[in-house]
Image 1: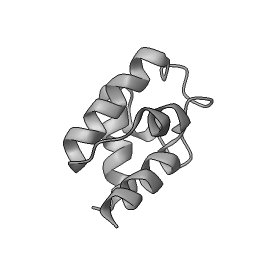
Image 2 (image 1 turned 45 degrees about the horizontal axis):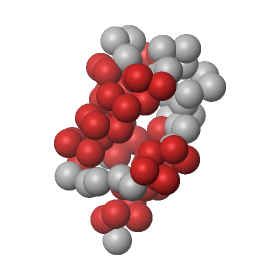
Image 3 (image 1 turned 120 degrees about the vertical axis):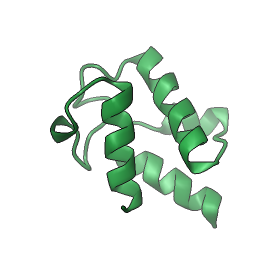
Length: 77
């Protein structure tokens, strides 16, 4: 399973959504359940799942699954 597929499952789990509702372009603007509290829960779950730690700046800049994927890739480099 690739990173984006793992992220889709993780976000659907955190937001208690059907995984079919979360696509690769999903983010704060497209998912009503992705509010500020959910954002922190998503970040925490991503950090645990992928073994990364995001800075406060990164956390504030993340707004979509694509942003999360790019941040994970930066930390893995």
